[in-house]
Image 1 (tube, rainbow, N blue to C red):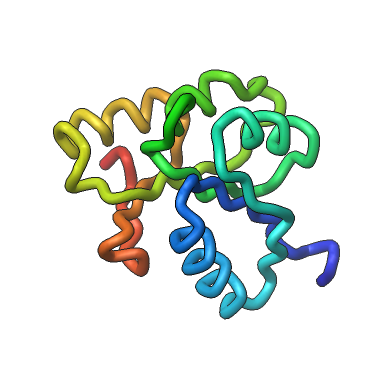
Image 2 (cartoon, helix red, strand yellow):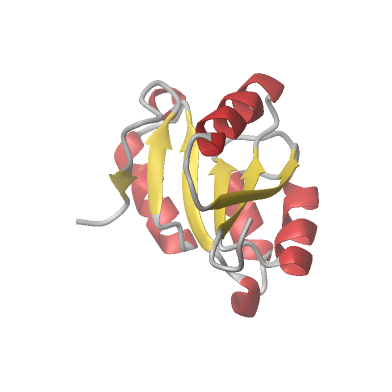
Length: 122
């Protein structure tokens, strides 16, 4: 890894999802996986302490969802955030997208189409 590598943190409560994201990231040159968190509380601590460049953040997690994670991260530690999850299972994708934008997310991607990135604002 070099100093120019993008430092990425994976946050997801599902081991299979973390494994898939880890595999996808390993195929991208210039990406350094700095860690994985399986819950929101650990994610807030890791983001605040390690200051990743990018966080792949699950929208739906028990106890503390992705939106609550972003509300809990200090502004000076806020990385680029891409929400991911099974977006079709959320109440309404549009409302979720609007909430993601207000929370500070940069984009959203569905687990069904992990290769397709959707901006949260036009």
